[in-house]
Image 1 (spheres, rainbow, N blue to C red):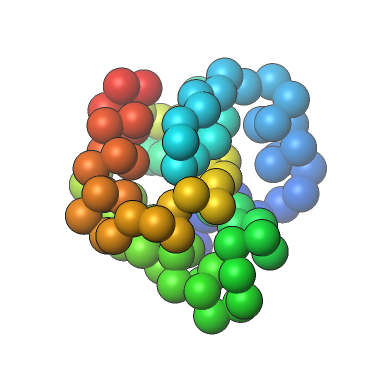
Image 2: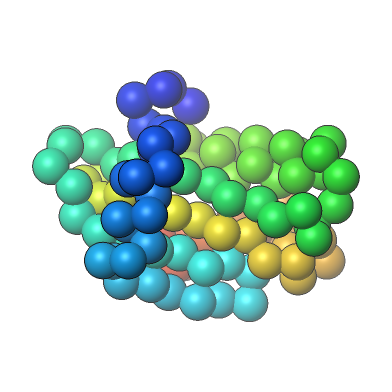
Length: 105
């Protein structure tokens, strides 16, 4: 994932969490708001409850891969928070669930 597609600044993330809409799923909590760019920007957050660092990084890489393979050009900023129940499912189901949510936005 290219650096321009990633939101890293804490101020931007906090503003998004306060002033955006959200969708809650069994596996994800997604906050989203329209941005001023021609592309989407993402922040992926994984809690320590999910597991050790290598497991958290594995799920971050999977989400980034899904987001880059499926192009959603809504010109939005997204904060994607993974929930602990994501450990019980495989890559295909994660792909289907995230695709269904992002298509609905």
